[in-house]
Image (cartoon, one colour):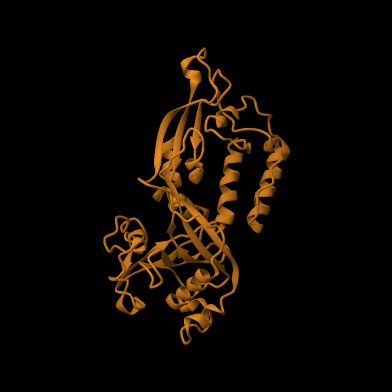
Length: 340
C-alpha cells in the first residue's frame, strides 16, 4: 500500500493531488461496520503514523461534534486520469491487449498469441494521443486496430496456451468457471460527485442514518471534483442510484464540512445541500470476499481435455488476485508484486 501511495505522489498533479490534509472524526457511540472500517485511520497510534506526513491528533475546537480524531497529509487520485496513465505505461512496456468473453478461467490461456503483430512508432504515437485525449475527457483510450486484435505478449507453452493466467476478475470470480468462489460478494457503495471544493478531506466513524451508511469527503486531483459518500451495503447488487440516500449523503457532508458551499454553516443541512453543484451520482459494487483477499496460485483443469493428453496439458496455472473490496487502488502495487 505504501509503495503505491509513493507512486501516486510521484504522479503529482496529473492523477493525484499533491498532498491534502485528511481529517478522521470518531464518536464513542459508533461501533458498527463503518466504525470498524475506519478504525485504523482514527487510531491515535495507527501503524502508519510515522510513515505519513504531519500525523497529529485533532484539537478540541476541530472536532465538529465528535469525540476525537486524527489528521495527516494524504493523497486522493483522480481515477479518470490514473487509469489511462496505467494503460499508457503498459502499452509503453510492450503489453498487448485483447478483449473477449470467457466462461472458464482456462479459456483465457487460449487467448495467448505467440507472435503478435509488431506495432509501429506511428501506432504508439496514436496511443499516446488517445491517452491524453481520454485523460482530458474522462473517456476510454482508442487503441490502434492492430492492438485491439492481439493478446498479451509473452512466452507461451508448447501447447499454444499461455503458461500462467492471472485472475483479477473481482466479483466475476463468483461465477467464472474453474473458480466459482462462493465467498465473493458485493458491498454496494453510492457517491455524489460535486464541483464544490473542501478545505480538507474528511471521514467519520459512523452516521445517525443506519449502520451501513457513511460520511466522507474526498477531493480529487486536477479538477476532478469532490466525492461525497457514501455507504457500504453488503450483498446488495442494486446498480441504480437511490435518490433518498443521495439526499442523506449530501446533507451529512455539508453538515460535517459546511465550507463546501459559500457562506455555509449558518443554515440547515438541507439548505446547504441544495446549493451543491452536482456533476453526477454514482453506484459501485466493491468486490469483497469472506476471509479477505485471495492471492494464491492454483493448477486449474482445462475444460474439454481428454485422457490421452499429457498431464501438464490438462491444467493451466492460475494466480488468483481478487477480493480487495474497497481498497483495490491502495493495495494494487503490493499485490501485483506478490503475484509476480
